[in-house]
Amino acid sequence: MANGSSPDAAHRAHILENPLRTYLLGIIISICGNVLISISLNIQKYAHVRQSQRGSKPYYTSGTWWCGVALMGFGELGNFAAYGFAPASLIAPLGCVSVIASAVLSVVFLKETVRASDIVGGTLAITGTYVLVNFAPHTTIHITAHLVQYYVMNWHFLLYLLLEMLLFCFLLYLYKMRNVKHIVIVMLLVALLASLTVISVKAVSGMIAESITGQLQLIYPIFYVMGVIMIVSCAFQIKFLNQAMTMFDATEVVPINFVFFTTSAIVAGIVFYEEFEELALLNIFMFLLGCLLSFLGVFLIARNRPKIKLQNPNCISMDKIPRRSHTDRVQPEAQRSLAAKLMCNRAGQSDDA
Image 1 (tube, rainbow, N blue to C red):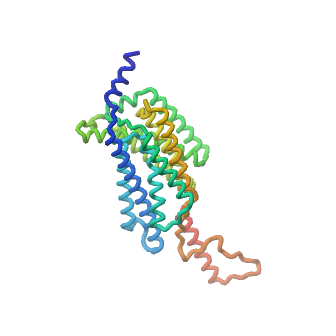
Image 2 (tube, rainbow, N blue to C red):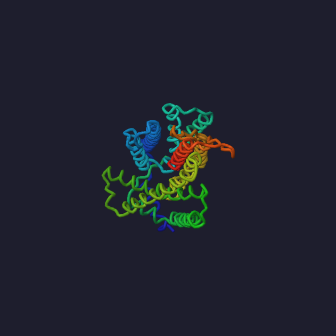
Image 3 (tube, rainbow, N blue to C red):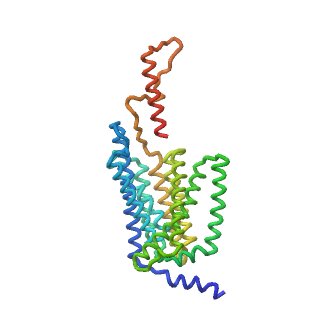
């Protein structure tokens, strides 16, 4: 029994520390990355609106749109780096910062209306974020190749991975074979992939950070295995998320995805990286309360957000077409004009889809 527990004790004695500076650095990088993401989304939205109003060139020919894309890349890079400095169970819930900042920027720059639910939701999300930062695990783990290999071979992670694979196959069977197109099923598929993404992203980011400090980790095969898992899981996660955005409204997808992704990331951090080990019961309770407040805040902010309809002035809405009685006669010119506008309206609907 002593021999079986000695590797675990040796690993814990070697890797667990409590450097507050590194912990705060991860939080700051994550917050800055999420703010950049929200700025990029609003810039891209502004470029879409402006190009549609001009009616000249596609949005991807706009320098403003590409500026938004570049900021999105920097924001995601910041989130990637943050996993190397702070626990995954903390970095994932901080994604609500992006939702809060996006709501504020849309009011300031895109002149969207401020709703009571935005104010209440923002207050709840900020309160939840404050609680999360204060009661989340403060232990910093130095990720090395040997440590990742040790975690991968733990029986509780192997059991977790087996259960996750079985659940994923069952949900995929319902989605593909049984044609069950329910938003919960699609978002669960995204969340299950996200757990692998979080595990691999933290492993890759941590090993890169360790390599920069002088302990080279890029020579170990586990680094590239985690890199492949990260890329593949991200690709399929984006695929299912895009399918969800085409089938359901964004006001449904955004809050459900945030809740499922955050929950999946927290569970992954607990199971794989043992981030809640030796955490006090009060801290666990307050951490979960912070998550709940953030979930409610994001739901209120995303609920029934106003949509910007980019409609061509030469098109008419389907519900504004006058009905023709049996005694009415339409001139050929009017028929051709009405048919052209109908075709334009259908084309616009096809572009939105």
